[in-house]
Image 1 (cartoon, rainbow, N blue to C red):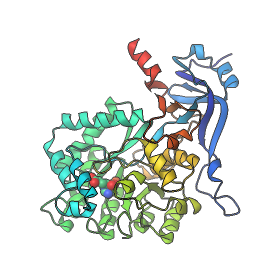
Image 2 (tube, protein in one colour):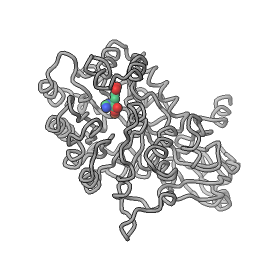
Image 3 (cartoon, rainbow, N blue to C red):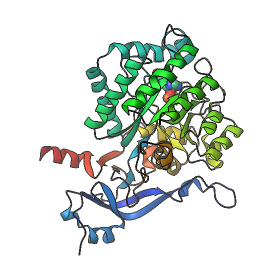
Length: 444
Ligand code: NIG
Ligand code: FE
């Protein structure tokens, strides 16, 4: 007797990454961190069957295909020794914007700093001008293009922040464009409201914070268009107190907190994140040992954004210190006009080469780590329901059928082949959306 007809069966994987080996932040019992090469549950000669969009079975090829014969599946893939991984969960992007800032890249090469550019009305504020001037259709087309690049690189779930509107009307417009993109595109989008991304031109900080708290947050909550509220807690942008007001207002309106913390200086955003129970704290280049412990003890997921650090000149967050403290690390792209790097594979490479993670740690941080940074295990932080499945970022039974077949035999090729794209096939909810199987489906 066999079970229900599967959407997809992928068999003959030389290596299949099910998820973390031993979920959770707890370090090994003797207090030492787990072996960096042993942090993934990797099966050999393995298969996975997806039924009704979810993983129904995972294990040895023979056992899975007896129960779910590939002939009965809508999509049958002989992985022929290739590696199979959960789809990447990119937990930090600012992907909805208009305009071109390539000249700022050139200016930085001549010695300008990010803050110099921002102080002269460039940077975020320049993208705000371009974004306000763009119509919804143009913003949507541009965002869909970014999502195509992300999906081709293996991201099946992507967080997208607003924050290039900086007024009620444009912030709502951006979030509605994000909602339309989510409906139109196979990538699942987790939307974040970030009206507190910068102080708009011609406004005082205090008065703008009032607008965010009194007008923007309630309007966003009313429309139900965001899961999170984020803030750029940074010297010269929003202070710890201002950031606290924004995050608390968000929380009162059902938006779970996230925080951009300790990117350029150590201001206190990490401690704030721990106090308000943020789901994640991101960047963290200047976090110290106390911050690392506070985040860990409060269950705040530290998100490493090595692509941004790379573009800013190569000062990186101390990923190993977070790992050694037993934190569940996430790695994300931070795709934005200042970090035009949409593929998770490149972030994984930098996480290994520049931050000292092992390939297994980087892959874990790009899959399950990303899902945890989006609250997959924090249902109570979302009064309107969690944005992700509790098993997202894994291929355990019951997880979403989001997977990658690499054009390579092991997960090590993800960081190893930088500048390349090792993703051959992407299944989203059990349906082929990238690769030869997707093209076949499109032709049929
Ligand atoms: O995460 N740090 C603040 N926000 C973005 C940069 C946005 C921009 O420069 O447009 C970041 O790196
Ligand atoms: Fe950011």
